[in-house]
Amino acid sequence: MSTPQEEKKVKMISSLFSREEELIGNVIKQMETCFGPTDWISKKFVFNRTRYYAKEMGWPLYRRFISFSKVISPDSIVEIKLMTNKIENEHLFDMKRRINIDPGYISLERLVLATGKNYIHRIYLTRGIYADLTLVFHAGTFNPLVWTYPDYADEEVISCFNMVRNNYFQHLREEEQ
Image (tube, rainbow, N blue to C red; front, side, top):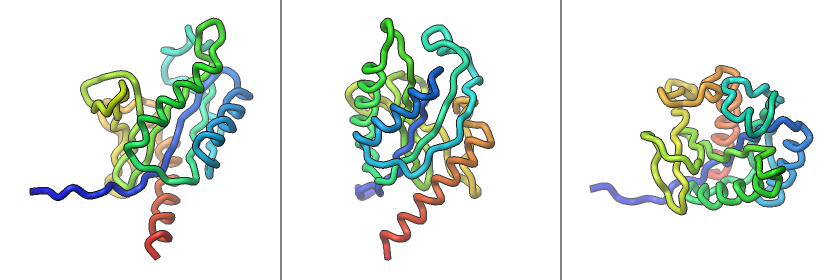
């Protein structure tokens, strides 16, 4: 029989992409008022692995990844996703999104994104939100799965997430001392 245990706190991350680079910066600041300060903001990436969002958001699209200083409980990802949906809606123009925000978290074992879309590998949490297992940590690095979005499987992006995981691991070690 397994004995339920409290899950360790995890490192909140998020992806933001938009046609408007300035909007990404403004929304990062808005997210900091909701979730606390960021401790890392990636360089600007060109979001070009899919044109899925082009009709709604325009083209070209730019992306930044961020992580937050404060660690969170993994089950808080539902409320976080609902809040980021609200932030997206605050920036609509003509009923179209100008920014896409994909929150998630990094644990020592995995990277999980929150989504409102069901799919075969996504686990329903509550309130219309699913957990998407995006990357798993094995043999010293994050690894994509067959369903991982191509942009999250990119070596440079994985390198960024490995760095965030290392910082999170250091944080856990410092807390234990």
